[in-house]
Length: 136
Image (cartoon, rainbow, N blue to C red; front, side):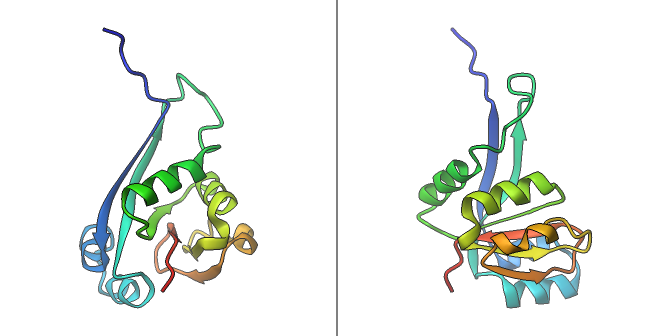
C-alpha cells in the first residue's frame, strides 16, 4: 500500500473567547482584550506544518485556499491565528487581506504590511494575531 506524504498540514479547531484566554493567553489583561476585540466564536488555527523535504519553499502559496477550506468546513466561522512569522502574515493578508483584522504584537511582525488589512490595531502579546472573516 502506498504511503501518503503530506506537503502541508494545518490544524484548526472551534474555539471561543473563554477557551482562547484560558489556553493561549493566561493573563487577565489578555482575557479582557480578547473579550473586547474578538468574535464570540471562531476557528482557531493551532499550527501549520510544511514538509520541507517534499517542498523546500513556497508552502504558503496556497494560504488562501487553506483558509477557504477551513472556512467552508466550519460553516463560514471567522478564523483566528497568531504568529511570529512575517511570511504567514504576508500570505494571509495577500490572500484574505480585505477581510482580515491585523492585531500587531509587541514584536511588530506585520506592521509593514498593515495597508493590506481591513483593520489594524495592537495586541498585548509578542505574536501578531490575525482574524479573518469577522463580520461583526
